[in-house]
Amino acid sequence: MESQLLAESQRVGVLFPGQGAQVVGMGQALYSQHALVRERFAEASDLLGYDLGKICFEGPAEKLNATEFSQPALFVTSIVASEVLRAEQPELFERVVATAGLSLGEYTAVCFAGGLEFADALRLVQRRGKAMQAAADEVESGMCSLLGLSLEQVETLCREVRQEGEVLAPANLLCPGNIAVSGHKSALARLEPAAVEQGAMKVVPLAVAGAFHTPLMQPAVEALREALLASSPRDTRLPVYSNVDARPHQAAGEIRDLLARQVVSPVLWESSLRQMMADGVDGFLELGTGRVLRGTLKRIDRKLPSEGFGE
Picture 1 (tube, rainbow, N blue to C red):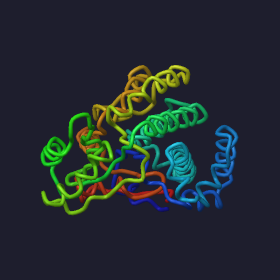
Picture 2 (picture 1 turned 120 degrees about the vertical axis):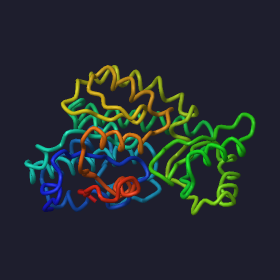
Picture 3 (picture 1 turned 120 degrees about the horizontal axis):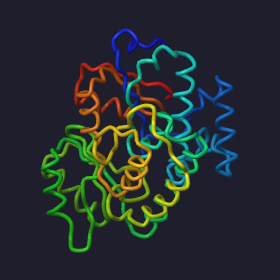
Picture 4 (picture 1 turned 45 degrees about the vertical axis):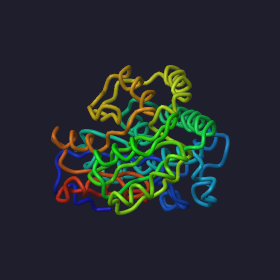
């Protein structure tokens, strides 16, 4: 890849995708072309206790979409994409000044920024996936994206649709007109027709196990806190923009606390991107599978240079 960002951008931000971006075949092209990728997949498979490459490359989709498998898969494919591109275009990485990741992708961002070693980060991601899957198994819940509505409209719909004892709330504030909602499946079922009646262009169910980024994930928080304490994160060499507050952080203690809080807090993705731009980032790289993050960027600033690598 000959990056136009080299010509157009002096201050590059690196972005990492989250759950929902996974697809059977992810990472296979890089795996076939680069020995360092094959070595990383072998290391990951040894640590995880199963053949990660087989799940990424062959599926089936139902298995890859399971939280406990999709999160390690996304983490590893994004990290190897960053390592290949860094080896091929070191001059581009001299211009990287900040990083962020969507939900699970924030763990990738912390690892990329030097806050965690690969093995420690992968163990954390595996623990996170299992903890979130366990929390999701406790209640019938899920997520969907609402396209074409404002945050105010979505918040009003959630208040009107949910019944006593139900959770239904905005969870991923991705970009103008694209907001993901999490909650009980009973409430989500009533949300879809109400959203269409309100003028939503589309309601898209997401391939996730449960109501991520809501209080329904609270059982996962303590497990994550314990794992984060055991992982010994370091201060990062680059600012990592947190999903929780859309602000840059480099101190290990702050990042550890924010990563634990993240699973029950709405993802402030649009605000994070806008803050990165306000802080001087003038071009973005999306590393790993999918194009979702570049899509959110285009809804915020169509003229801003952005590219992907590792699909």
